[in-house]
Each structure stands twice: as structure tokens, then as C-alpha cells.
Image (tube, rainbow, N blue to C red; front, side, top):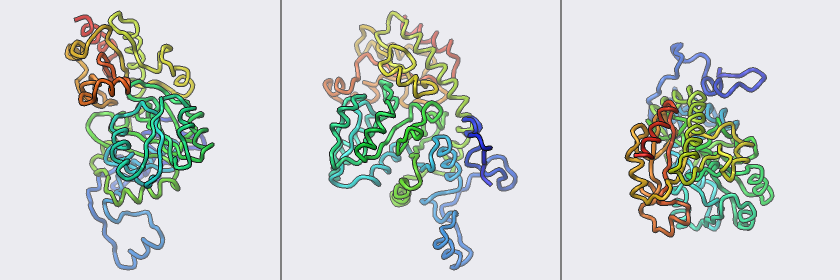
Amino acid sequence: MNFEPTARRAGFSTTSVHAGEARQKPNAAITDSICCASTYTFESTQSILDYITEKQDREEYGRYGNPNEKVVERKLAALDHAEDAIIYSSGMAAIVGLLMAKLSSGDEIVFFDQCYHRSREFCAKHLSRFGVVTRQVKTGDYAAMEAAINERTKMIVSESPTNPHLSCIDLEQFVAIGKAHEVETLIDATLATPYNLQPIDYGVDYVWHSATKYMGGHNDLLAGVICGSKEKLEDVRKLRGILGGINSPHNMYLLERGLKTFALRMERHNENGMRIAQFLANHPRIEHVYYPGLESHPTHEVAKRTMRGYGGLITFLVKDADWKETGAVIDACRIPRIAPSLGGVESLIEQPLVMSYFDYKPEERAKFGIADNMIRMACGIEDADDLIADLKQALES
């Protein structure tokens, strides 16, 4: 019997710990065993026929799913208030799987332009080879997004908050545009997580996360997930079984374990993000801070209305610094590690120009709002006072 909350919806932490799991597990273990099997056996030919005709909920072959994966999918669907969730080997595998299942030659999609650069690259450079057109409009310009929709448009896409500018999307407007034009909606909520934002509750069709980040939470696994209705995800799941972008039982064990402390970690990420953003906003060497929890952020009111907290990611500009001087500030930090990614217990710091956009021309970087003096810091769960003291010495060194 799977975990069933009482008539009232269980709290987020209770759901993180128990949802998707059987109350009594094999061998009376409190944790789910790792099921290392690539294939699953049948007692007889009749048992195969029963499996097919009765659509039995059991395993057949590892590419189509495994027991550990099913537990985590049920847990993630519950956290996102969705009917179903599909786990992939990475966040990028998840969006590729969704778009490949939903789009055909001649179709179009519309993106808000503040987005993860690999998402943009896949759509603009690779989907285009199959005849799919990607249109990009200014983030937050809902009139421009609506104007870009035509009879070939199948989906509108945004992050919320966006990476790295942390702009938050008015999901009511976003969904209203989709419904008015009968196009599907996709939100990348990786930076928000289900703890801070519930796009499904606003009527968004698909929610996408890189579970590598806050969900796993320990910088030790790769995974991605698409959440939505069972009906809309049926063809997506079938295509995943063909493309093979699955995850391993060991990774699913790690992700399930990470989710047990999800709420606790997010509380600290939110707290650290807010305190450090406030510190940076008042430091004389900082030109600007991008953080939706600050009143100075253009989308603060949207964030305040829709989000529980604002996460641990902060982007800021060092005043009067060129790209080398900006790199020197990063090098002077002693606690955050220099690395891409975010959402783990360890703080990470990086310079977007160097880490993600070094091969772009200056005018291309300017188009996407990537300044030479930009730093992106992903606050971990260390003590905020220590992180602040470290940034202070780095900025003043």
C-alpha cells in the first residue's frame, strides 16, 4: 500500500519523506531497496499475455522503467501537484524527450529569451534541422509572446525564475495566452523547485526540473523530470522507452534519499539567498543584484505573489570591473567552489561569461544580458554569516 495522506493535503516535508513509497517494503526495510536488474522474468507465456492484456503494473525491461524509478516519479508528481512524472537521465534529456514527443516538422514554439543556454541551443540549432521553428521574445513581454503565436505554434516556454537574471513569470498571464490560442505551456521551474512554486496549480501543462540541482541536493547525481497529466505524458513516456534516456537504480536511490530532506534544505537555501542578496545590495563594490526577493527586482511583486521563497541563486555585477577583475573576486572566495550548477549543499560560484558564454561574440552576450562583470553565486546550506564574511573579504581584497 502506497503512502496515503489524510483528507487534508499533507505538508511539503511529509510529502517529501513519504509520498510514492509503500508503507511496508520488502524485508520490512524502511528504505526502498536498490533493484539492479536490466530485465524482469515471467513465469510463463500466459503471464506475459496477462501483463499485456491487463496492463499490469510490473516491470518488463529496464529501459521502460524500474521499481526505484517508479517510487521517485510518484514522489515528484505529488510534490508538483501533478498526476504523473517522468524521470530522465538529466534535465536536458527531459526537455529533449518532451519536445521530440510533442513537435513535428513545421511546428513552432515560442520562448521567452532569458533561458538556459543549452535549452536555446537545442531548439535553435538542432530542432531546426527537423523543421521546427523556435521564436524568441523578450522575457516578460506577454504581448510579444502572444503576437508571435500563429496557427503552427504548438507550445510556449519559459523559465520561472529565469537563469541567470531571475525574472519571475506571471503564470496566470502565461497560461491565459496558452489557453486563448490552444497551445500547450511549459515552465522550467528548476530554480524555484516545487517547494517555492507550483506551476501546475496555475494550469501549466508541463513542469520541467533539472533534478540534478535542488531535488538531489548534494551535487552527486544527474537527473531530470517532466511533470504533468497522465494523458499528456503518455506519448512522452513511450518515446522515452525508445530513446533510452533513463536513469539508473543507484541514481534513483540517491535522488529518493535527497528528497527526504528537500524541505529542510530549501528553507536554508531561501534564508541564505535572501541574506546574501541583501548584503550584496548594500555593498559599495556592487553595481546591481538580481534576486527576486529584493524589492529592486523588476519582477519582485510577481515573485512575492506566487512564490513561497526565492531560492539560493543570486546574480550580481561588480562595479567598474572588467572580466578579469571580476574573475579575481571569484578567485578570492574561500568557501564557494568555482563550478557550474546549483542547488547542492555546497555553495558554488562562477562567472557566466567564462563558464557558459566564452565562445559567444560580445554582441551575442550583450543580446542575452551576459555582462563582463557578472557573477552567479549558488548559495549552499553553510552558515550565512560565514558566506557573507567570505564575500566581504573577496570584494575588499
